[in-house]
Image (cartoon, rainbow over all chains, first blue to last red; front, side):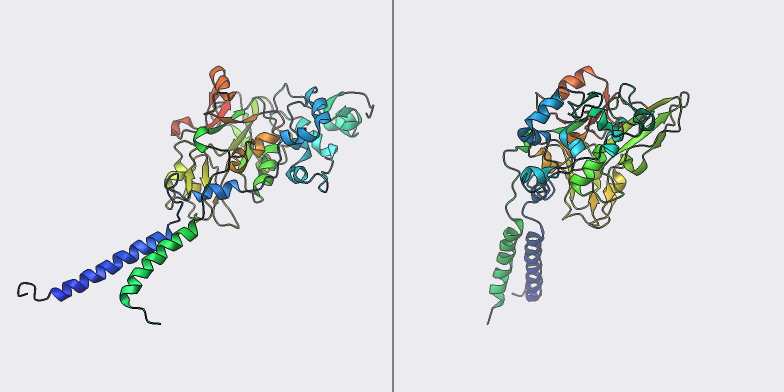
Length: 157
Length: 243
């Protein structure tokens, strides 16, 4: 005993250190999320949270399932590569509940010129018009069917 | 109640370990989706973009992007005949409502759609001090908004200007490549609505994806290749003046 006559001080210090270590491990375990490091140095559960976001756009495959006639008509025309929701807007709610959620018809006066108004930066091969001169302010669908937009001279069918 | 010091020392770590499991929940990816089988990128064809802004509007709707901020936007370039290193670029409201007729004449004029490049070696994830922004195993750069401190380092680090500070959530925000859609087998909102097919989502790990044939036969470039960010937004027929 003579050699370490103040050993009780050392023991107290060691006990304090041990308590600190346990507290550190406990706090660390509590504050680091369980999924941290699942895929890398980040919270793996964040991926689940991000994938859980609801859809606004249903996707054209869903539309084509219920509207094969429109798909048929569109796939033969110049708008074959234009997906439904490009003009009709986000329709996931309509796809989930077609009975109650009814889509609004797009306003052709704004819709068509959104793509087809003249602009120097558009590819030259893209069909562009000066809306004022082209149709003397008549709605585009007076002469063009939006789903198959070649000129058809006013027959509204 | 009488709890001895010894009991407290035993109970506190036990409670801490139990709390850990309470917090964690059960992490799982979307069903029928294996992250290791995908590596996402996008093909953007400059010769097809008409600057209609459909992508910008669709992105804002799909992802609740706040007014005045953009996860994707469209730029209009005007490169004069002789001063090719100094293009004139405009992007009114990110091109959300299309572009007014240009006052420019002559030269070269084209649209460039932009979004997060989902870089393989991204500068933005490297600077995050807390691990709130990261690469997923399928090659998408995401932000964990529950973990982000809002220090804005990543907003500054992105060489493409693709991040913004969300004005109400007070965290960094950016394009997720519609991660909630692509993990369900859908394409991104911007690709879904693009009327000319100027944007196409590409899965580089899928051998049947048309991107592979396209990359072999077309002139394709990424933005700022000298930064070696490993960008995965492949621009077809990109003009050298685009930054």
